[in-house]
Image (cartoon, rainbow, N blue to C red; front, side):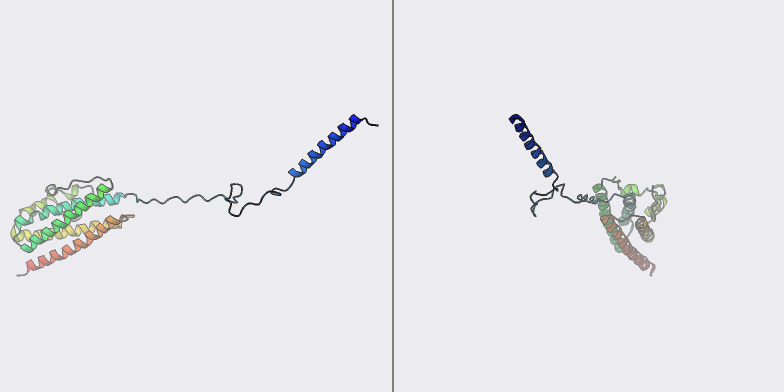
Length: 231
């Protein structure tokens, strides 16, 4: 027969074993059983998210890279316009025709305005702004320039224009300026034909205006030449 102390030890062991077994059963219960259900308006936790959040799309670049063709075109057109100013500066002292004087003044104003626009365009983009001096343009030789300058007069041709007077000057001026304007049209066409050129809105508008204005002035000059040829 067991002693009373042995019976007490056995009873204590039974209590301990029973508590261990109960704890094991509770830990084996299915996940979420007995846990409170998530509220419908609860924010999802990292454990609840089924898939990761998509990465934000890269932001598109708002600025267009400046293209060398744009700057080259502007630099070239500024030099081209400077020579036109050197030519119109000869008109008041050499021509006696009011219509030719008016034409020369019109060309001078438009070319100066366009040079100012090109200077602002270059400055706004941190590009080099070349000096424009019609006095120096009088001696410019297009063959010595870094880019082809269609329609520009050589130094010898400019001197021949400067030496002319009266009706001889009028005819030579109109012939030379028509050729000069046609050269500007060629420059615009060649620029816009380059891959990627003309993407700058302001510069595209400027090139289009140059094309339209020069064509209109060519028509006026040809009409003047025709009028001078009539007796």
